[in-house]
Length: 400
Image 1 (cartoon, rainbow, N blue to C red):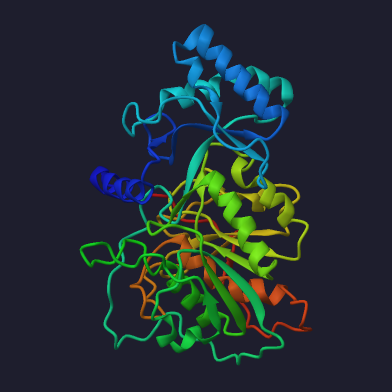
Image 2 (cartoon, rainbow, N blue to C red; image 1 turned 90 degrees about the vertical axis):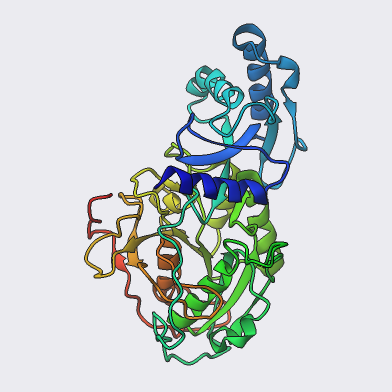
């Protein structure tokens, strides 16, 4: 991506999180974004070990202010995660945070003894992934038919599959689209800025709901505005919001998630791990976008699909190029991506959003297969059509 485009997207996400200085990482690369001055640890004894180890290291070796190391959240949380302040987030710029990097290094010996990770950055989970979409939305003439064309399977309340969309909220005029007759949820918090121009990712949740309703019409769709108007949220907050969504609506048959982040690791995302532990004990399938980084690096939470214990609970979705033969140039790929579905240049099936090319477009297109395998508690058959997603045995094309 062009450096100035990344900078623009970074600034958009930073604008959406006032008072939360962000940095890119690891170091000064742009693989992911994270909160400056804060690390995450599991509640209880592990949080105490992290806090004490970082403070001692800062005092003895690092030259940082050990007095800045302190808890920044309650000692116990639903997510099982404690925020620990390790530095002044106002220092430096967005090109990495030395305090966070040094805190991570200070725990290496302890993590080696424990045999698992004890500390993590607080990453930004985003639908823009590396702060940029697969490409830019391009308006199409209203005369052009929607793609995909709405499936003709009838909606039947007694057999409809429940789908929870974790995204931005619904546009206020979403009812003007007949496809969204069985869609409910939160409205977008703010559609326009002070200048009257639509916020950058406004309409994304409505767009995803429209795709879902088009390919799997026998669904009851609930959209939650978990993500802010830039399509982003901090990792620790994301874990809390996921629990809030299922507490509010109950565990659905399918969760559709178009957001995530890489973290340079292969063992999951610390801030959402408690939710993922609970997910695998439910009759719910998480369908998650594999991301737009053109990378084989695991992208979370989609990459849980490749971890033991989650292979029947998570479906990771990459993007096919227009001809359907290979992966799109922007899609993430690797053994952890389990299916690929069409994505490139999809006109919106609802008027709320222009067409986009990204793995978030692929994710709702796998819903027919996901709903076909989901049996609602109140139904004997889901009554949804077969899916056109391609199994991951078909290799993606070489990345750009």
